[in-house]
Length: 114
Image (cartoon, rainbow, N blue to C red; front, side):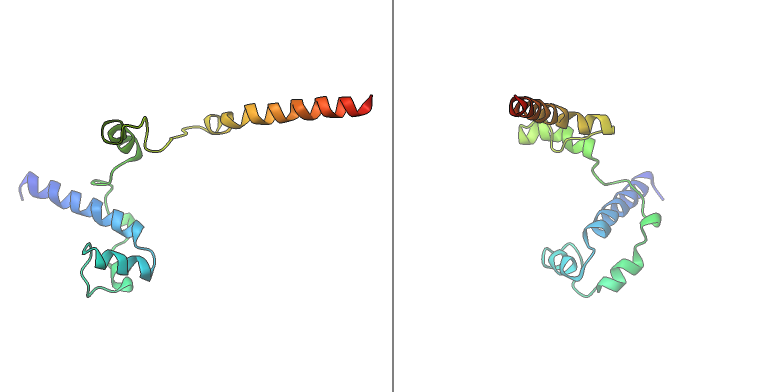
């Protein structure tokens, strides 16, 4: 087996893994069959039975960091989707509105006491 055949096989398995995560219900299967991504004769049970998540490689799926990189080129946006690597980054965007609300509440309650 040549190295290009191995790479093509790994890429096909990666795309199959992507389809496995996208096709979770019968309606998803019908949409994939109408778009000719999956053969029309396959059933949901056959599709989910043939593909096990732990058996399929991660090669061939686009990671979020790679999508963010290409979004700069093709979408002319800074990022496709914001990645928060730690909880602190996620909750930091809420600190200013919460502090502003608490400051207003403090001023209003102080004014009501006088």
